[in-house]
Length: 160
Image (cartoon, rainbow, N blue to C red; front, side, top):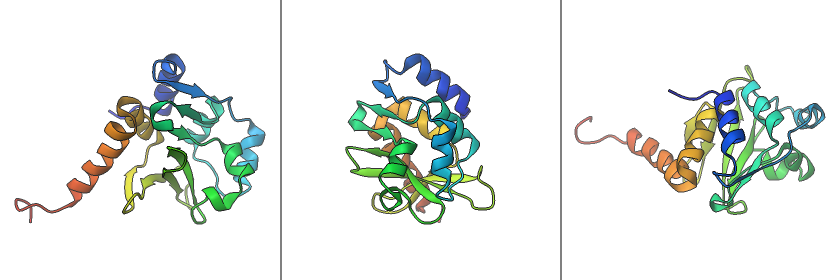
């Protein structure tokens, strides 16, 4: 069962030191409003996470959930991917990025993808994305998940 964002927030709040996570201060309503001036209206679950913590830094390969104020202060060109998507996570000082793509017709419908070599949609749940990171880190969590999705898409001799 996929955890809710409230479950993930509680897990991080309780165990962030054990996970090697440094939490940033929570995003204010002003931070969120400034971010949303870029015409990217945040989904409710992601807004809830940012109100808990405006991103975080992890010792695990320097993985981060990127703070909203960083996106704003560094300009849209570095973080915004098209009209309805922005980089929400990165590791090893922008060695790789994970992007949130928001449906323009419904802000609460979105996908999170990674495009290391090819674009691979991982999930439509920020809670699931964070849970994968918390349970396995960048490599055993996020990259193994990505590879599993790719291998499930490829036809095999048994299902062609």
